[in-house]
Length: 79
Image 1 (cartoon, rainbow, N blue to C red):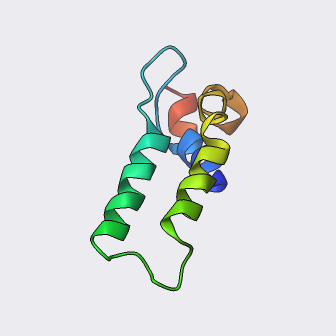
Image 2 (image 1 turned 135 degrees about the vertical axis):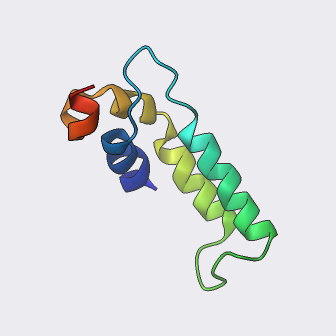
């Protein structure tokens, strides 16, 4: 979860500081709940609560990661 929320999304999502960047942690929580409720999650993987706890552990750092220019990809940098 940390790699997705703090590295990959800030690099690829083009939402500049001051713009609404969406709620990626909330969206990820919703997706995880759906996958578990629809029995599409890998049963060998962690429990839903473990996934949600992993999202919660990094969610507070997500806005700062989105605003950190050192994490921006080329498309976001040139926007």
